[in-house]
Image (cartoon, rainbow, N blue to C red; front, side, top):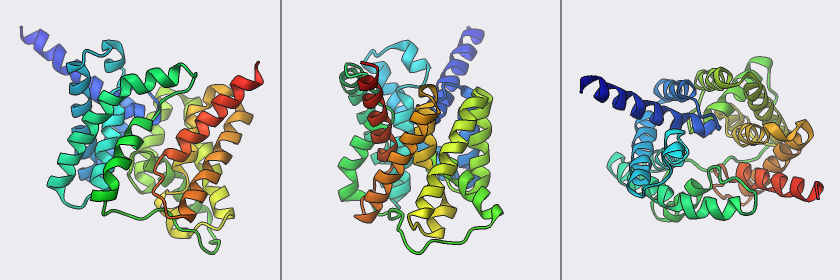
Length: 287
């Protein structure tokens, strides 16, 4: 009995960690542990947010009798974790943020099945789109967090600042900030796949560089707000080839810059839209 309970607890923990790992598209518990370490280093509130969201989404998926294999792989929990992170990032009051996080994460779990089925029929991935849909529903009435990246005079960056900004871009894939948190994310991705880590680093560096060329401010670069969509896009397009990946990152930069210009909180929407665009274009190219 004790051994069975221990195994069940271990399986539940691995599912939660994979839910975190799936934020950077890795079904790997160690990757998830690295993200948790990055959150704890940056702000323990973020670790609590991700845990609340992942638990709520996974429990909702279990109650809805969704696929056990997908559940164990973290495919339901990661949008819940992102929903929790968004709630705690944009809502200052902890009690309100926790309530919104639970409701939003539950919403992502219930939305996941019909929405992903509709996208699969069109050969598109769902990625973080369930979290985006749910988050945009509550943001107009509850958000009080940071503004989108603003574009101003092109900054002059030294080598240390460049490395720090690129790593911070990796940290922002999970709403964290800082080069150290980004280093943990990079280590976690590399543990799952060295190739994926190289693509993520390339996407973050290219995305950040293009944004700087477009006139992004140094503060946005240092915070990692310019690189995370590029990193996620590169990860999603790893198996599509270098040229498709580079094109996808460029599209994500253009979309994020446009959103920033109008003051819209796009979050990871540029990554999702850019990846969908490349997937759609590749389908047409092979016909």
